[in-house]
Image (cartoon, rainbow, N blue to C red; front, side, top):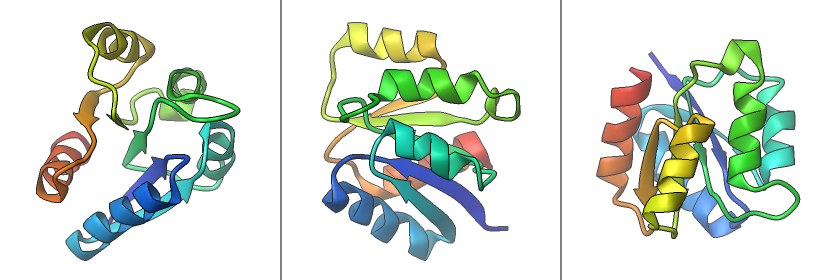
Length: 121
């Protein structure tokens, strides 16, 4: 079974790294470059999990999580925050918005794969 993943990050390098980490492990990775683009991409797919950055232009990760959770069909979709931020208050804010987990960059590909398999499998 192929897991569908939506990765939202304003850094092309980070999107490429996520794709390179996940594709060989059998994930199908869709990408978006900010929260607004993420919502647009989400319209055409049914992801098993979503990865989002926090600091992005146009719509940040918190706004994106809120927008995803506002959609009935994505209310239970696991969302992992992948960010350089490590502040406890930001983690709490993300959890309150509906994030499932928090991974600090730079990420370990094996840990990211394991986390996604845990929340989406």
